[in-house]
Structure formats: C-alpha cells, structure tokens
Image (tube, rainbow, N blue to C red; front, side, top):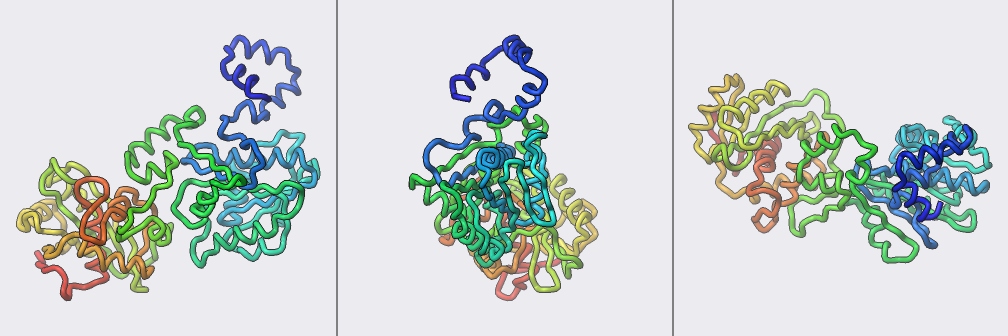
Length: 442
C-alpha cells in the first residue's frame, strides 16, 4: 500500500469504509485484519533505504514488540531462505514476548501463514520455508556458531550487563550474520543508558543505521486510558517518565556521584531472604509547605550487602501525616529501628514520631557535614557492588543522579530529600558511626 492509499484510508469516513468492506469476500475480510501496513503508524514500518541496523527506541506501550514481530513476519513471507535470529534477555522472555505474547509473532500471523513453533528446538518454521531461532543474550556462546540472514533483538537495553555479556552476544550475532543477499537487524528497546544502546546511537550517522524514536502517547488509541492515567500519576515529570514514557535517553550529569548505568547494574527483582536488620530512615521537611519528607526502607543482608526495599516519601505533608507514613512503613516491613535526621528541630522530630505510637527505637542523627559529603562514602558502596535496588525508584534515583562530587545538587526539586534519607539508612546499616554524625537515641 502506497502512502496516498494509506492516507485516504486513514481519512475515510465510516460510510466509505463500510462500502469498501462490503465489496470484499469473507476470505478477503479475514486477510484484511492482518494487513499490517493499514494498521501501522508510519514510524512502525521499516524505513526506506539500504539500512543494515534499525533501532526502534521508544517508550512503554509504543508498539515496539508489534513492530518487530510484523517485520519478522514480512521477512518470512517474502524470503523462503530467511534464517532469523530472535534474541532476548532470556529464553523465557523470547518465548513469552517475542513468540507467544499478545503482540508476538504468532499473534500477528494469519491462520494460513501461521508458523509451527517447536519449543524444544527453539525454532519457528514458516509455511514459506523460512525459519526463526530463539536465543538468550545471557548465553553469548549460543550465538557463536549459528548463521543468519536477519535478526530481531528485543529490549537490548535490559540485556545482561555483567561481564559485558550483552556486547558479546551482539558481536557474536553480527559475526554470524552472513546468509542471504541483504542482512538486516531490528533492535527494539526502551531507552536505557547502557553500552549497547549507546553504541548503536553512536553509529546512527552511518548510512547503514537508522534510529526511530517515539513516546507512549503516540499509541494512545490502543492503550487503556486507565493505564495512561496511572503511569502519569506514578511517575509524573520524573526523569524515569522521560525515559520510560517519552522514549528519551536521559543523559548523565557529568561529575555526579551516581549515574544511570551504575543504578541499572544494582537493580534486582526480589530482596534477599532473612535480612539481618531493617531500618526506616527519615529526612523530615522544615515545613508542611516546603520540601518532601524523605522516607526510605533499607535492609542489611547476611552477606554484608544492603538492599533498598521501598521509597515511602510523601510530598507537602503535615508532621502528623509524615509520622503516620513512617509508622506504616515500619509496620509494613517489620523494621528494627527508625533513623531520623534532627537538624530541623530534634525535639520536634522525636515528639512527632512518639505521637504516632511508634514502638520502635528512634535514633536521631545530626548532620555535621553537607548532604553531598555524607553521600560520597555511600556512593562508593554502590561502586563496590554492595547495594541493590529492589525495583525502580524513579524520583529517588533522579535525586541520586543530581548529587555532584563538588558538593552541589543539580537534580530535580530544591533538595534531595529522598536521597538524603537513603544516605542515612545506608550509613546506619553499613558505615557505622565512627567519625560520622553525632547520634542521640530517644
């Protein structure tokens, strides 16, 4: 379908579309539902030109998976000799998302062109004779021998980071991309500041590399309104929203104590079992109309490493409200102690927490150094791989990436309240009190 025909169909009234479908036979109507060029947005269709790499880097829900799956289907239908690599972060994800997912290859194919999926062989066989094979980027050597003509690499931004396995998998894939007359790779991903994504972006000036970007909101016609409202309420204007929703690759601030790649390396799904200690750290606001009240929950494991469990911080809260949030966090995580900064009126902080009927011991800490100076040894713990984040914490991580080594703060908001609470928690759990802040227990 050429652009003029697509534009006409997009602008046609329901009456004209009904008349058009009335002229179609039942088999033609069924086939029309699988005619991707009609339903796709222009940015979801392969770019023109003699490209070798097509990077689709866009927000959640943009339609990246459908774009990759439809491209694979098109290649398989028109090239019987095609041998296509399907590479994801794990074999389970390759099967669940790329093949059997709601926007995966099987969902995109009409019954007469449906491939046979052989899970034990990790293979798809298309009626045309084309074949596709599943691979895990966590196993670079699995891509060392096989040869392919095409490849679809999904979510390359979350491929394994440790030991450069992501780059090794990509390199092994490219070295085996030597079948057919025109080898091509489609890489779909949410923007993440990792080496492989930066490598492809650096190559976009070359004629062989094309980059397509986009935001979640470009696909609102196919997304529930409740989803849009929920993610907007949860992530707001945070840098994670810029990344995950707007499809923007958020750059690091030069000289910051934390960077995005460091935080991605420390991210895990579940906390370690049976922690040795759990604390709730609080950075109280000076007033209910000013900064947020930073409230974080962190645990120390038996291996001597710490895990950030939750960010329970709240905005514009009265003393009674933030004290109740602290109490709820301590109950929810069965904490052992509460650590609260008392520079903004130690007696007031202690009184507010006691009024919330908190039965735990409360340790009041008085900062004798600035926030950034206190944060530097904590940043060193991250560099040493001794701190883990149990999930994404967008607003807190934005603040961490704004703490500068020179002693200033260049992140969102007036003050890094969430980051400061985290620093107090990890100082309590891992750095002890020798030479540190003065402490008083109430």
